[in-house]
Image (cartoon, rainbow, N blue to C red; front, side, top):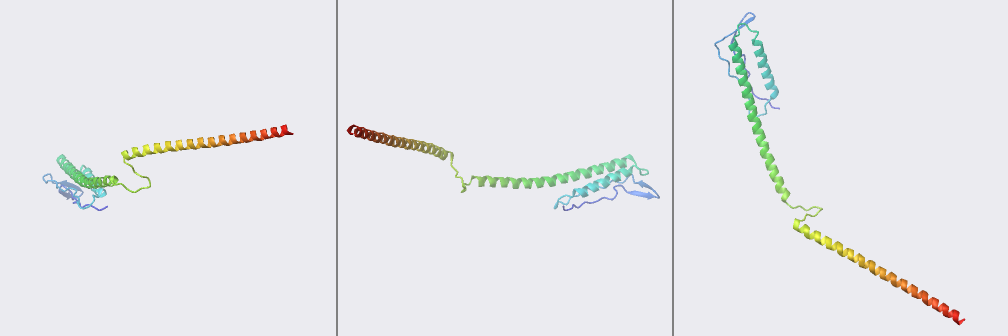
Length: 187
């Protein structure tokens, strides 16, 4: 992840050190340093977290300072609020740009996919329009009915042949019997 350029403030309120005590200048204005983002790269959230944490620690350590006035704390808190709000606004602008670019790409891909889906392709399974499908189904039904009728006719012809052969056998058997009877009568 690329890093962001940040102006890291020193202490926002000028201080004077006297031995181990520190004294702040109550008339100085807090600095307007903010967490600045490098717009050319992704924001480094870890660095932003560390800077925010350091600012909170500095604010927390102010309560132990000598001659710190409530206005000093208020001004430091206001400065911290401004920094955080500015950082969040910068993140919002960055993410909006990123999402907008991705959304445009995704819409373009979807349009291309829809256009490609409309193109007929050569496949192993044929594609038929709905009207063609109705005609094809009617043809399949007629063909199936024709095949059924053909099979029935074949069965009828086979049955007729079988009956004829049976009649021939019966007539042959009668002839033999009549010849036998005749032979018995003659003898």
